[in-house]
Image (cartoon, rainbow, N blue to C red; front, side):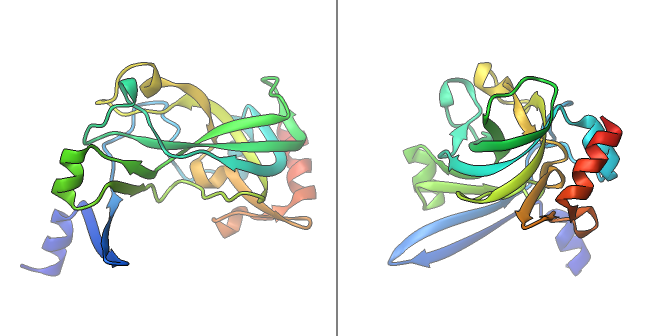
Length: 208
């Protein structure tokens, strides 16, 4: 089979790594299409659009990252279960706060390591499953960040119940809405979006 044909058939890649005599299963996962209005829907956008779509923008420090939770009814597992983590940010100051957020803000980040039922673990050879969304931003405790936030739904068509359709805060444009602060520099995974903090503050004043 030609290489191009093989690639067209592959939507799921799995790597099995032997660690300390055990097994660790990692899926690089292409999830089912997100619902309209999902926080995971990403499109390349100019900086002004990121600002205009945001309901809040703040500079602060990441103080906590939760364990992975399942966005499904009763926190129950199914093959399309959507994992997410809550990232807590202690705000130093707001550049925009049209929705009246407090100084401690919790945002949703998709992906993470999920515990699976015993039957699934035996089948897959691992008690956990790691699903990565390439479009999501990464965070670590103690990180200084500038983030553009908006409210939206998380969840996919097979998820149901309150947990699966939460109206929660997330990043505007996934990784495009998160900047790592180093001095007066705000660094984005997309280099063309990187600016100085001063420049971003001025842009927010102009757009908002």
